[in-house]
Structures are given as structure tokens and as C-alpha cells.
Length: 138
Image 1 (cartoon, one colour):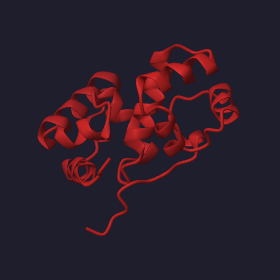
Image 2 (tube, rainbow, N blue to C red):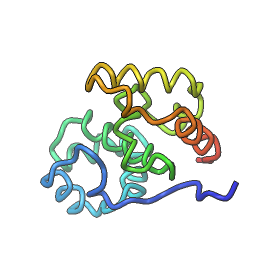
Image 3 (cartoon, rainbow, N blue to C red):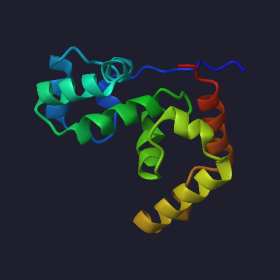
Image 4 (cartoon, one colour):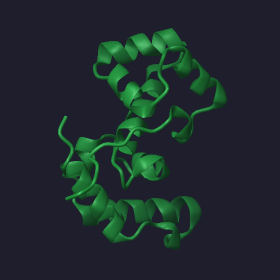
């Protein structure tokens, strides 16, 4: 396979981060998704980051999960939020979730939130996410 196994994105591209949260992360020296994942390797470092930012730990956990999922080239910042809302919280979990089950979860989510089945990524794309996630070694 000829794809890059991990992508690094500017922190501004992660979905759901306010301008203020982006600035706070940048003030802590975190400007990319890879840096965010590195800063959150352990529970202790995530707690320290939450304290430094003066935000609840659940926000830091969410941002790190988004950054981790965005590292998959075919997922990126475009689909990391969709995966998180569908119940996938890490690259490891994405790699282990059967494609058909994940596609059904995403389809249910799209129909429930937007009544739009047509916005669901095709099964082939979901399969690509899983394949690339299985190729990541951490």
C-alpha cells in the first residue's frame, strides 16, 4: 500500500474547537494534531493539559480522540468528528471495528441527526478508513 500512515493537520482544522480553545492550545505550544496526540499520551499528561488550559478533562480527551482519528489520511479532519459521534474514539478502535457494523452506525447517526442517508460515506470509504487504521503502528 502506498499511502502515508499518518497525517499531521493544523490544530485549526479539527472540528468543534472554538477560536479561544485553538489559541489556548497554541499558547501551550500545540499547533498540530500530532503535537496534541503526543501531549495526551497518558492520563497524567491529559490531566496536566486540562489544568493548564483550565478546561474539563473530557474536552481534552475529545480533542485528542479527534486528532488521533484525523491522523488517518482518508479520515482527516473531514470525517474524524463523524467517527467520534458514531462511537469510535481511537485509531485502534477504528482498526478493530468491523466495516459493515461501522457503516451501519454512521448511517444510523446520519439518519437520526439529519434525516439524510445520502450524506453517509460509502462503504468503500469506511473500508479504506479501517484498512489504513490497521496499518498504523503506535
